[in-house]
Amino acid sequence: DEFNRINVEVLSVVAQQIISIQKAVKAGVTRFVFEGSDIALDPANAVFITMNPGYAGRAELPDNLKALFRPMAMMVPDYALIAEISLFSFGFGDPRPASKKMVGTFTLSSEQLSAQDHYDFGMRAVKSVINAAGLLKRAMPDDDETLLVMRALLDVNRPKFLKDDLLLFQGIISDLFPGSTDPVRDYGKLMEMIEEKSRTNNLQPVAAFTSKCIQLYETTTVRHGLMLVGPTGGGKTLVNKVLAEAQCACNEFNLPGLVTTKRVIMNPKAITMGQLYGSFDENTHEWTDGILSTIVRMCSNETNEDKKWIICDGPVDAIWIESMNTVLDD
Image (cartoon, rainbow, N blue to C red):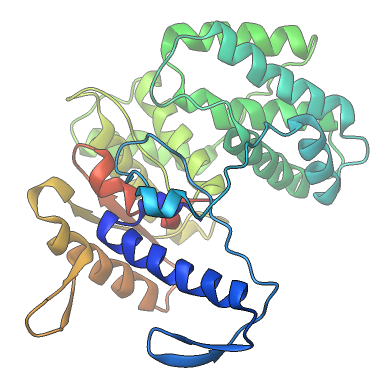
């Protein structure tokens, strides 16, 4: 999977390995020598690879490797059908109309909203809405299903839109879900604590700031990895700081989902890739753990129920974030 993420030097070695397997199959032998070991050969074996060509941080396949594979074009699946079946699995009774509306929302959004790097209206966006709808269905099993899907669409998408696009998106939602309104939600103690901690940090708890804190909280419930995007001085660091402090303050009231939150902050661009993820010393053949891998291990070894946020506070580029792709993937 994601084959062209491998470095070119390694790819050419892989090509040699595949050639040796294919030669053995052509020769019709049952055993052959592979990388110095004598192994059994299944004549029906095949190698399949997936790749996204022409992408930053990816290698171009060497010609000797291209010759070993036949390309196979993929088509975009029927999102509405996938959404319908997934919603059935979450206990929805008749999800067909809602799933069609969900896909319609994304189709219209991709056509009408401005083009931004962080907008995504593909399969992953559909999947995160389905997961959010499933969580809402579990919490409110008797509510109107169409309304639950509309709420999930708003919860997942509202945080990422720019303010001009938000108005267009609200228009799309009101066209597709006529007469349905998003009920005002009461965040009670959490909202109180966000306002209190804003003042502690010498901030004014204006609606724009507190609503971003709530949106971050909502997003953390459906995603295990997320990105705060915005200009310098836009309040990205303080939104996560205030929310973490508010969740810590709510811990004593034993509210579900609101527990002590620990933040571990690092700047990924201040250090080399080896220092970030770990490196292998060619001379001594010793592996040295990186800062990020050490932090992840430290957090996962803790036995308490606290939330741990590992925050990479710095500019994002394809080179360092690419290695996190498998961790952050659904």
